Length: 566
Image 1 (cartoon, rainbow, N blue to C red):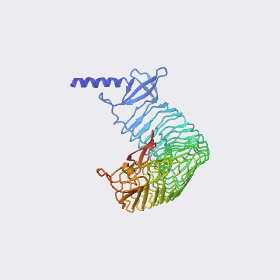
Image 2 (image 1 turned 90 degrees about the horizontal axis):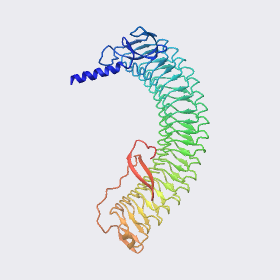
Image 3 (image 1 turned 60 degrees about the vertical axis):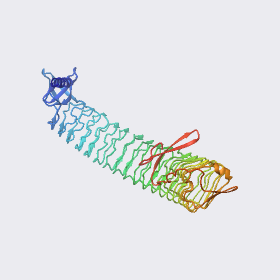
């Protein structure tokens, strides 16, 4: 067994030895151009044959010219990929003027690195060359550098100053992400693209002037830049990427150029101090949750050119009080105004045909709403917990009311069920304490669990003759409900499928049928179901699908916030 381990160790060391051409002291070199006698520094090793060891290297002084075992002189022109990866004690690096290229991850994870000189003449620096060099504070990239990889300074937490080459064209992906103490960066005017996540989590970055040649603000560019208060976006920009300014909590206002046509998912989400936003005429698409959790946002102007707005656009914008929905929109998405607790007025255009899941849930200040005549579907929790909503007219064309659609609308006084609605779903009007009048059309076939439970002001209801079933506690805890009328005969009533507890808590003792009264009981004993309970404080994700019989709903576990596709 011991012999096998020794053989394996020897084989691994042999492979390691083959990774370079010659070694001088603790530095290994690989010939890159035999014709011109050029080499790269491939890696640092100690003199042990057992493993690579980086711990002894503190100050690195690279020579411009080295000699191999045969006395052949070579010019050192590059530092290889991962050459000094994880050199835990490396403090300073001095490179000769002969260096032209620095490879990928060349100094990745050198936690104690404080000082590096990059000589004039270097033309390329690979991806992640200085990533996670957590203690480096200042770096100058010479103007000779033309090619810079992604993640160059990723995780350089102590970096406070960097000078970029004047002719560079691109700020790479995640180039400065996690540079926690970087207060500013002067981006050269030559830059044409600032890539995804370039400045994400730069907690100390206070201001940014993006160069004029940029035409998009890429995804996550300034995500979690907590100190960012001023941003200048050039006039040529046409698109704001997903989460571009997500969690920029110091941003109070921002001006978007006239050419902007698209705002991505969560582009300004959780900008807690953003107070106003004027969207330019021409914007036609706003992504999911674009302004969600903007708690100080009071005023937004949505241009009439818009045709697409994602779900949860203003979710938890608790200071928003007035919104005009553009005429080009044909549906109100899920959770659009969820938890907009100060929202008092919303204009809904006539072409709207559906109101999405939780669209106005927890809008406590909303007192009345004109629902356009073209609306046919109102999905689950659309108006859940709209405590001030006193008056709403459901259009005649409505064919679908989702579960909990008007649940806990405590001020709602009257409701007329449209003729196209055949099913009143679970807890649709539960907790409407001031509801006094409900008018059912003959088309209603089923009234599900808790549909009118806890409607304490309801004194009388008239049930349609076409009714097929009544669920658990349909009128549960309606303590003032003393009169229930059924438009069919007693024989018809006997055919209605009823859960034993359908009228639990009502004062009515009989159902008045067309030809006489019937006790509020059922002929066959049934086990008593669990009582109806609705936690109206939770935000629950609902998946909507179109089936053969129309929309169906599946309620799943609560999530921290609504998700796209809910």
